[in-house]
Image 1 (cartoon, helix red, strand yellow):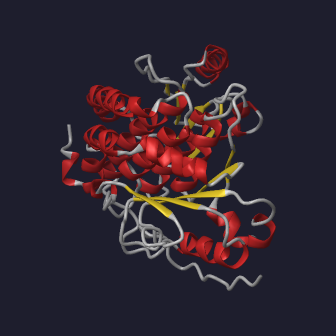
Image 2: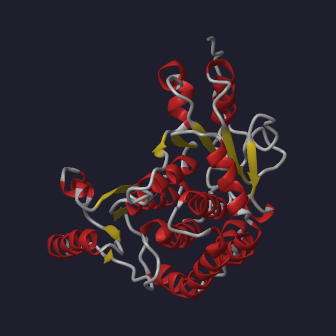
Image 3: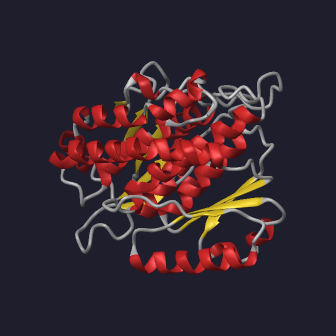
Length: 356
């Protein structure tokens, strides 16, 4: 097996269990929930760009129906890229709690969202979850700020531990089914689960062929976990392995045409029995229709619903992507080195002034 530990990205993936376990003890969930409730916001927007936006998608989908008749805020995923481009269309109506995710905390869109809020909705409450205390998000005096451990401030191009730890942090704050005092145990259980899964993921990645194309599928929050999985493959392969994502039911409606030749597929199966029935139907169909494809449906230990298992599934894609990037001879920690097209912190975005 190739020694991938020479890559910072790979070491950051392997560090996730220890990070989660330690952070679960440190995270002051009860205090933060009180602060969130004190804003009085009837609606919460999860905001970010790229992987940080997908965190919001996973949360909004995974938290649907959690309040079971109890009164709770409406939860939406609203990418910063949408708000910055159309601030007057987005920043209207009653105040929303803006929850911003940012690994660097310094992307143009993170800064642009703050500027747009200052101009159009300065009274809207803000909560920043970032991996960089010294960033624009970390130093915003108008926001409550949660700074994740320094270990989550990934040095590699791809977001790995930053993605998973920001996701779990917000899940702990907004999942009414998790008692604040149960947070350390939940994070520890997830950490133990991933630590047990990682050796198998590494072996699976080492044995897998490098596909011409890759597809990741799931239902509900796992569909958006599939989106992050597909992005990891495209990023770390520098676009040399095209990757698609979709929902288990949505895939048949045209996107299945992407499956040609040596296209391999991964299905993130739901823990919900009703949703899983549809996953299993699709799995059988794909195996019958595409004998040239390798189709994998990872088995996770029971105990976590789809929101909380999302980072476990994504960890498999992280391992696959690093393995293929290394096999392609790329710089895993900077796959676009020398090209000037993509950078670790997105560059080239010119922010235009927002006037009231």
